[in-house]
Length: 461
Image (cartoon, rainbow, N blue to C red):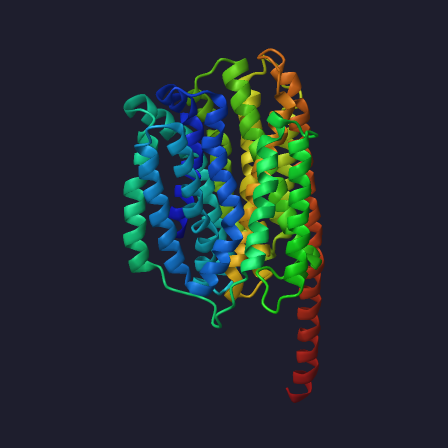
């Protein structure tokens, strides 16, 4: 059930991206308005993830999970019948509210239902692989639905999935919450929502308004003030929304930064790939979507394997593999030009997908393991927020690199983007290194315990 919610959120994002040109033709609007069809969803989702996770820890995870499904489903129906772009953008923002109650809360349900560390790591690997499935299904399904039934069908398709999820969650998903009800941190939640919302918003609007414009500088200052206020409030509360001392731990903080890096690399890849194949090579949206299948297959197959590796040997090896594959995939595309053979493109996409599959489980498991199960909702929400921030940052950076480049010049303009993808892969060696002392400590502790047991039991034998 938790995997179904992840699939639903991922599918909705990729399907809508493919549908944007058809939506523009159907509603008679331009590119600028269409961007907010995607951005409104991203902005609200990123701003509310941690607050939704905290509410789930307090009021019950299944209850919040089902509420998110209902909100998401109702907003999908409004999107399907939207008469104007204003109504569509508003409904997409409401979809973001519902989606914020699904991803981190589903992860918290998994953590609490599976207390065994090895089983939990494997489950998180399977859970993470569903994102790869949504990557594969979204572009292809979206293209087929639009061709057969029009753009509104991409929202209607959510209805049967939502109904099934609501009914089955009532039957199979156990209720769980913190054993002791924690006080709501209203000031902290408000300040965090403002800080994340403004940061993501300026990343989205930066290429249009200019990174050094008065509006952008004002947004930077506002986000900085909200962040300082959040730190000040949280450091003085007995029961804060987010325990800031967690970020003093290199393992936890590097895992959060690793989540940002992974999703910067992924979204730079997806955007540059879409622009290159459709604008420079003249491929159709459906053909460009099919080209991402190697990436999706790599992510889907390697995520469960990564979860098993985390359960057996810890997060270090999967992170090293993830960083290596992403870096090599990015380096393969640095020499991209108008005539790059498809037999180079597809293996490069496959390598990046494999790296993405290996990265999710160790990063998520490390972040979740940093908090007790009673705070699993917030733990999952922190990494989900890092992913959304990384997605917005990746889109902004990639868009800025190719802004103003024509079809012929786009491959050359995108080369710094592929260097960035490779750099993000190399960055994953940092959380891999940070996880090593913990593993060594466990081994030395285990060895010490074994030697003490031997010394105690040998004379008795």
